[in-house]
Length: 265
Length: 265
Image (cartoon, rainbow over all chains, first blue to last red; front, side, top):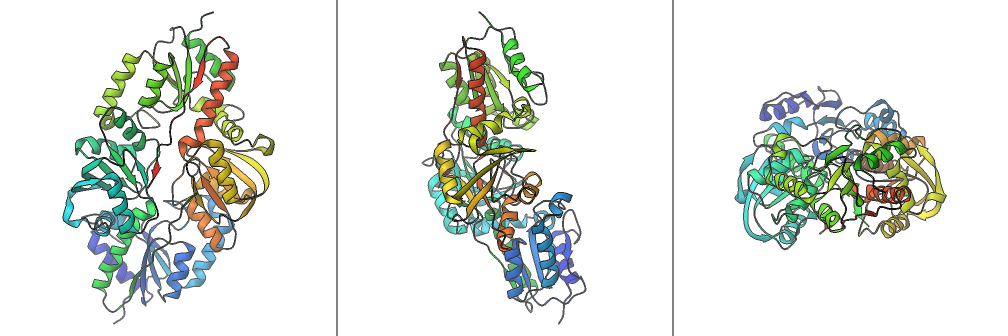
């Protein structure tokens, strides 16, 4: 039984209650009437990921972040660079269609990216519901350092960035993916939900981290474990691959992971 | 001879060609007619920095970033937190006036924050001018790892984050402070100025770093050394303290440094 790209995208959109073209989500490359031979998901359609998709004989790649280094379409100056032009021509020659699935997967109930991270952290049994952008975890008895070690182990990370006292014992933890680490979502959440620790992907360095530093100066111990944007969202795209595989048992669905982008020297 | 806060702020504004209240810059706390006993500069007016200023008998603190975890005034939800309320009352009781000097010091020619970083890196002899937001450095013969080691040593950092091949030899280097690491300022600069390496403070993780990763996939080797926002801008505030001391020889002017905010686990 053959299924077209269009039908796969409609299946995806049905499950998140939206449509295939919504917000930043769209089929960036490829003909929607092409029959799908294989699907892969990934955090971002880097050149390495597209080459890997080709070698897996996948012709539909579903990725979370933008192709050209910007949440929206790249500006004129970026679009004119040699790297962008060569990447575009490489994609056109690859025969791989690329669909961006950002807003859709976040719109799912619960947010598919947040759920995927909680699942990968093996905290589904400790999940105490969702508050706006965050998953609430109750996990008594572990220190910040023990939680950091758990996170690194489950996500296969070489390191995480931590603010606060690594020996502090934590009970109430908030988890936010992607660029949800800014002061506006995170700072009020700490106090409203009485959280000891927040894990997030990425956020401006002198917003939430400086709040936590001042909070510690006031003898209100709090801590952050900062995973990195990709590390926090890739598990959600892995979860999406598994969900799609269940719905499309006859088509191979892969998740393509990548090595961490940053090296600490 | 006595000098008021107002006169110090006018002196600062004269040298950058602006006025004391400009953009986000303003006297956040204190009476401008108070006589200045001592001055301190710092990257940010954390609670720790304010306490240190008090113990130095300083009554004018000049800091680069916002008091309440936001580039602009904090939103309603942040303003209502216990940490903000306690910090406000601590500042009011401290007797320390706080002036934010962000736009002014960046507006100087050259940008005082960028100049301060280049000076702290001991690269003034290698400085090949400025292009928009960046300082251009020509420094032949060092690898990425050697440059990272030099930067850590000069800035007293435990680590930097690196993207790219640490053994790559670099000649043309761009230096950008603060949150100037985004794709729009940095990506076109790499190609226009034919740079091998860019050092910056902070930027969104999947913009410039993903460009560099794709560039490497295309056999166009490039690299990033990411310092952190505070590490990239504190040297400029240190330089500002020294400039002020020269202009005000009778008043003690200090620079208050802080330990790195993030720990790597």
